[in-house]
Each structure stands twice: as C-alpha cells, then as structure tokens.
Image: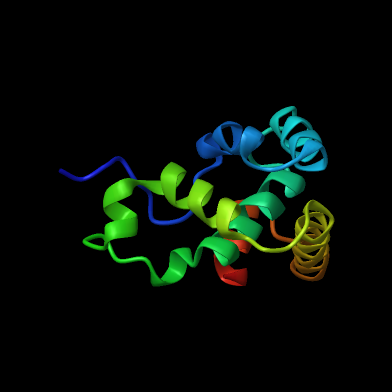
Amino acid sequence: MYAANEILFPAHVIPELRSSRGAKWRDLIDHVLTLPQTHEEVLAFMLMMVRLNGCMECETDSYRAMRGCNLCALQTLRRYKGSDDQLLAIYQENLNTIRDYLARTGYKNRLQAVLELI
C-alpha cells in the first residue's frame, strides 16, 4: 500500500525532523516552525530538503515513495555524515539562493520561485 507522499518535500513534515539531529538542528526546526509556510526561510528549508533527499528523482512506485516523505527525510538526515553546522551552512546557502532569486525576479508567488530553483 502506498503511503501519503508528495511530489516535493512538504512543509508539514518539518516538525517530524526535530529530533533527528542535535541541538542546533532542533533550534533551526523550532525557528522555522514559527514562520508561515510561504516565508523565505521555510521555503529555503524545503529547498534544502528537496536537494538532500533527491526528491526530483523520486518515482511514485519507488521504495522511498512508498515509505512516504517523512520516513525518507528522516533516513536522509540519519545517513548524512556531516555535522549540524554543515547542515546549517547548507540551509544558509539555500536561504541566500531563495533571497537572491526573489530579489532578482520580484516573484510574488514564492512557492513558484522554489519550483524554478529546483
């Protein structure tokens, strides 16, 4: 049976990732959860997870997709060999990418901007 999954990493999975890493990661999750889903920092987090998880290559009949986005993201974070500081640096790079793109294009639809960056 197929799990509930999305085409790209969904924001509603973010809270489930809170305990998957250390204190700095929890602080980032806690901060992101205080923001609206269309905020550039939430979108940067989603973009980071899309890139880390390899969401663009995920097929609906693949084992990853059948398990669902939450389990896929948890597995990706558990297997990530870098430190929390490295993950936060990746997040910051994605945030800079989002901000630069929004400033350059003047997009009002921020989610569409993320889709174009992927």
